[in-house]
Amino acid sequence: MSAMALAPEVPTLVLVPSDRAPACARRFLAEQFRAMRLADDFVGRLVVTELVTNSCKHVGFGHIVVRIVVPDDVKDSVCVEVWDEGAGLPVVRPEDRDATGGRGLPLIIGLAQEWGVRPLYETGKVVWARCAV
Image (cartoon, rainbow, N blue to C red; front, top):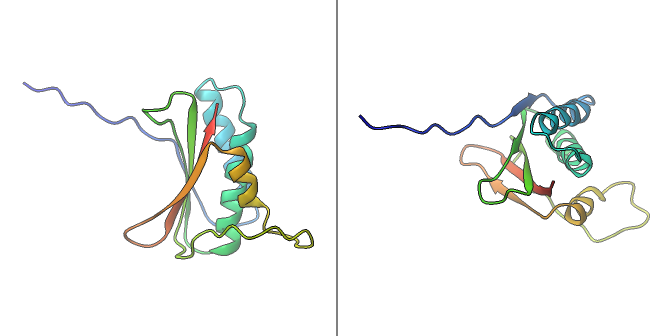
């Protein structure tokens, strides 16, 4: 008889784009950090807020899926993933001090250990950021 190991469940939240979505994502992240006994969720809350806000603002349709992943290979970080159905990829724009937006991705770049985008085979993408804990 062979033993089978199952992958652990990854905490997941499914949202619809709305003004309330970023706050729901922040609460979800804070709950997951508490469940994992991680005290400092400040960077994670900023990152998830920005990524969900971008999905709402730039995609605005379909579902937004938020996942909090603890990588097997790195014990001192958590990966925040935000999936959406939009085809457009995030763009880091040059600094414009007069602009009313466009500061979120530079903020993530400054706070996260690393970040990236993974296109999905069906439609959409996953934008992720690895945050130190």
